[in-house]
Length: 324
View 1: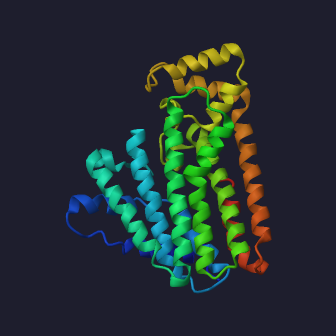
View 2 (view 1 turned 90 degrees about the vertical axis):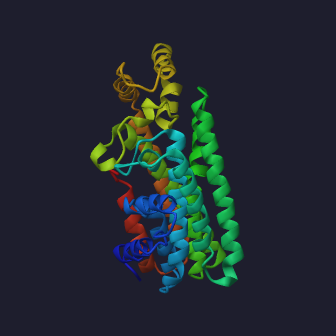
């Protein structure tokens, strides 16, 4: 069994060896920049952990795991363009550092690189891996479109929002675990349990991001606090506040959302004040705990010796109270 730190090392080394020292440099330097800024590497590490549950030969899963991380970063690069974000992981976003056209094209290359790496897996499971990834990639795009649609809709339900984050965020975490498990030789039922584990972990993870965007420490979180509020982004917190607010508060909230993205009117403080009044943070935290509890059920159902689940359980527990 490999420890979390050992698996992180495998991924960091593989990321360091990415073929990005190529011409034209304007195309590849942004990709190198994206990977130099780091990130949690949660998805590829989970993929290796899933493989390691069944097999100690995790080297066969390193390239597919890296491919899934490349795909994730491709989606972030394009999301930042659509959101007009200026920071990612406390660093200037690619479209701000270079320009929008370069960011789009570099992202396109990353999507192709992702396929190259993901398909570097055992031939006997290649069709299934491609099938899972294709379904996942399409779902991520659907989730992003829902997210963009919500920007123009006032009446978004919490159910709509949860479906959106399932598609945009959770399915990729789930696929990372399922693909890693299959590479490790997992029986299909165990791989499906790990898919469910990843799906619920992704739900909890995104809801935590929503909470941190409004209530986190900016130095730890890596993005400006209140960024979602300034951009009128429909998060679970905002949608729940709109559902719960009394008529007067709701009218004021709608008025704030109808304004510009600037914070000259104290928009962030006013909305955070309403969140505090309604106990929105506490409700969101309760929902996070609900999804984390479902991950425990899934991992309990995976039929491997308990000692092989130790590091996965420890990682899950550490994510429950993360600050970044």
